[in-house]
Length: 108
Length: 120
Image (cartoon, rainbow over all chains, first blue to last red; front, side, top):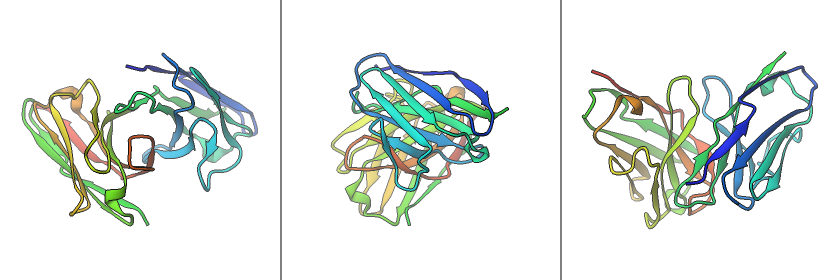
């Protein structure tokens, strides 16, 4: 099975800061990597699909990059409403999907 | 508007069974793959199972394989998860989610979840 390792598991940053989260796959998954945001008490929301494509309606301060085994999720300018836990998810190893462990983002 | 409404959760004793349902509306149900994802209290997301649009491709997480069975009724716009031999570690909020396409790729829309508690 493909393992997805996210880091860091949590971070604290100031409003306006650039925030970067990484996700590493245990084997090559091409660009079959998606990112989700989950705010406290809410269902997750898809932000980015296929590593770098922004879902419709998602603010442009969110972006993703990478391919193969190493992926990056970036918030270019952290806003108070971005407080959430972020998850990566692979779909290369069908019919199984795997989520990363999550990164909790807080405001400093 | 896409709506996914889960039901069937509750308190159940270890070793017993439970069947979750997800009622879908606002889209052509039989054109899309569907998934179950769970989240234990205070923990991260765990993909549980997925089923393609025509039930031709089905997958399970290792943690539930052999105990859980996913199914769908396209005539009723409904997704199901039959959970047998339940364990304490199956305690979680169970989400139903719609895929973006016919096969298992990504989770475009999510329900609000139904809580399953396994305890004696």
